[in-house]
Image (spheres, rainbow, N blue to C red):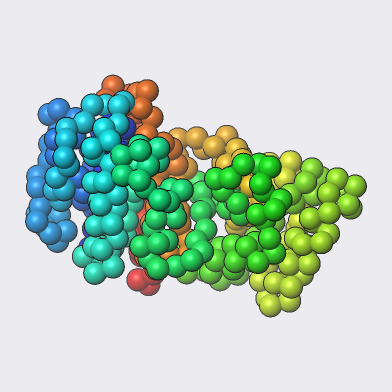
Length: 320
């Protein structure tokens, strides 16, 4: 039996703690890192001293690797005093997977503003912090569900900044990491990568923009000459119907909403965030802290369960 997955607590005043309890028995063995005081009242849990003790915890009981926080939490309202502990839990999980005590990391959602306000968090988000902890410069965010995988080449920046931030070098790095990740963690020997254009109708031969002609198409030609199975640039408005999706393994898009709108339309509850390019496996549910429903018992655990299951599949693929 392989070592269990480390599930970070995320923002304790969000839905992360209650979803951890609901994911029990539906997925791979995992343990939760956090403060037991932040779990919903009446939660069945058992503290463990080491991840190997997960196997001794009864079914239906949450294994908890205790990480004390400065304060209790109130669902829906982040406490700035807890911000540094949220960050420390992420670093602790990375240390466990790097040491081999955990097989992978699944991260519950964080509240980036709360971390900035309470602890001066210096990173745009989870992904960039994990890249820092993993010692890598460039990682790729992939969103995945049963029928679609998408990669945004630029992520959390203003739409007006996309043309200047989308460079041949950054797009090439994204395509190479995506290609390698699909081979290593998804067992695809020759991943089919569809590349979207930046402009409407993929620029329509230069009538609606030149990025496709001057940067995206030449890069695709270059990488295809190396043996990568890429095609495009394609008009984004015709890439995501069922027949189109059947023709590729992943769609690389040029900006955030171009990638995330189709996957959230197709599977809003079951999408998974995967970070490619890290030296360890990391997934996350594709939703936020949901402060408005935290503690009410109505949040759905579908995405967390899918994220934990995908973690297990990726670990098995690397072990094969």
